[in-house]
Image 1 (cartoon, rainbow, N blue to C red):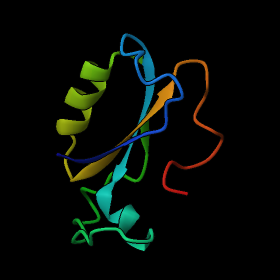
Image 2 (cartoon, rainbow, N blue to C red):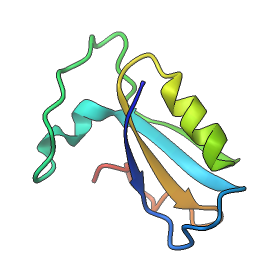
Image 3 (tube, one colour):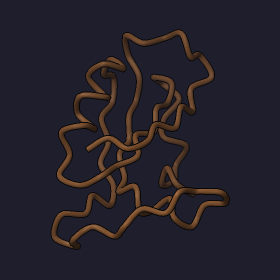
Image 4 (cartoon, rainbow, N blue to C red):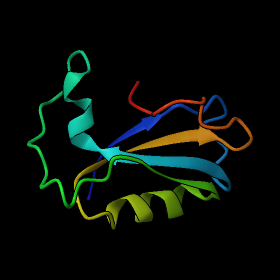
Length: 88
C-alpha cells in the first residue's frame, strides 16, 4: 500500500526510467514533522526493497502492491541509491 512518495530526483521530468526504493512507512516515524504511522505486523513489514530502471508508473504500481504501508523513494536513473537506506 502506497502511503507516501519522496522524490529525490534532480531531473523530475524524467519519468521513463528511474530507480525506486520502498520501505515501511513506519520507518518515517522518527523523521522530523512526520505523520505517525502504526507499526505493521513484523511478518509483513518491508524493511527495504529496490527496483532499477523502471518507469514512474511502474514504481507507483509496485509500491501500491506491497503487503504493508510503504514510502516510495524515487531517484534518477544512474544516480544510484545514494549508498544508504532511503529514510536516513
